[in-house]
Length: 181
Image (cartoon, rainbow, N blue to C red; front, side):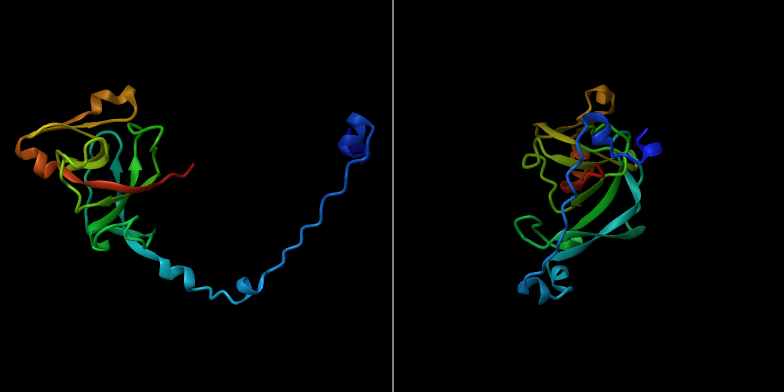
């Protein structure tokens, strides 16, 4: 009815004329006017984004040399310790880490962080059967590590690393993640 009569919806429902919309005015401070547009780039570092996805489910193969592009990470040693060459980013496929990670989200993996005792209860990228997957690391004892999914409906996708597989099965700690939500 509002469309046919041209009357405002507030007037039709309440008999009142709506308040006029506020006027939006943008005023730049002197600091903003002199801000150099390239300055922000000095605070970020490019991290390789691999073309292949990493499974949040069953492991999938990741080819290290297949780079899709780069993700920008904040250049602060507290937020990103170590050498940037030790990091790679991958998109998530699957939902075993739901609701924290879902398909399309991006994780940044620190390949220098592989000590299972230090990674207990941390999000970790695992290598298994020629593929890779993200799970919570549970350090059971020396020579026994589990990769546990967040989504308890996918508990059958738990990874179990025993003895020498512990050393080769941990790709690195998930240092960051970006969610598309």
